Amino acid sequence: MNRPVEVILNKETLAAARQYAQGVVDTVDYSKRNQLDRDKIIDDHFVGKLGEAAVEFVLQTRGIEISQPDYAIYDKHGKSWASDLFIGSQGIAVKTQKLTTALRFGLSWTFHFEDPVLCQPEAVVYYVLFNDHRGNRLVVYPGKKIRDTVFGSPAKDILKSIKRVVYAKDNGIKLKYN
Image 1 (cartoon, rainbow, N blue to C red):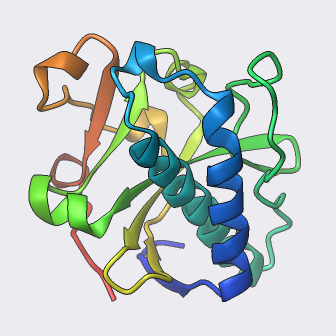
Image 2: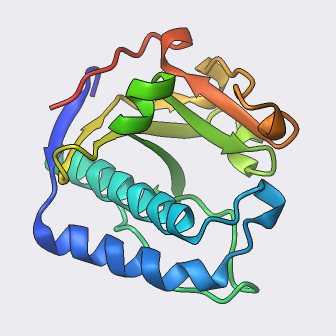
Image 3: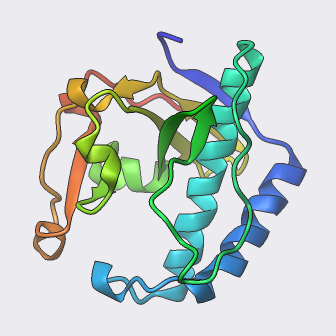
């Protein structure tokens, strides 16, 4: 895949992602990330799971055997930094941003400093844009290895000590949405 692919997710996938997001919110502690807004946490998990489903769909349609997104709800002790998806034993990371946010701040994706994928130069990350104006449409950008990715600092000062950001403009990615 060398160019962005548009994906339309079905109602069942949207419902599964919504159910997951509403179930997981009570098992996470985002206070260290300076995030206490329950609705924002639910939305972040919903959008992230949609991105995983979109990447799975794109790779499956290309004949690649890939794992499904994990919709299980784990207690706080069962959480991990495991990859979002797997092709065999190779982990794949997925980062998703909403169109509303991209139009306001620029197309970008955020990594927490503790994310182990940042220390894996050969790890592949797929970047996804969720068109929250249209509800079920996403754009999956080609996978990119960590070693080939340009990182920047977050715009918000409060996040600079805990986050790294991939800005589309610094990585040859153009805003495209359906």
